[in-house]
Length: 112
Image (cartoon, rainbow, N blue to C red; front, side, top):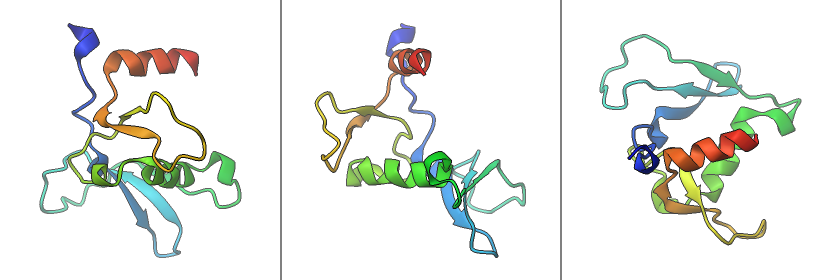
């Protein structure tokens, strides 16, 4: 059933934190995680907003990385993890070791 499909086809390693020559950090999307050689085709990029940290995709990415279980930071781990059922802002880890289901993700997006 579609309620049981998972977001396992989007991986942590597809979103890569990089720096340009001016030392500005950015996130780059990798379409093909298995590609050994860089084809020269650049993926979409989101640049840091150092002057606006509350609306900065790089700062959000770093916070998300910090709140994931340490063993869920490998390239082929799911990008979207399910939140822990009971969690406080003071907890170090906010997410479970399982991917977020499509149904749960749709429910979250309806609220946003």
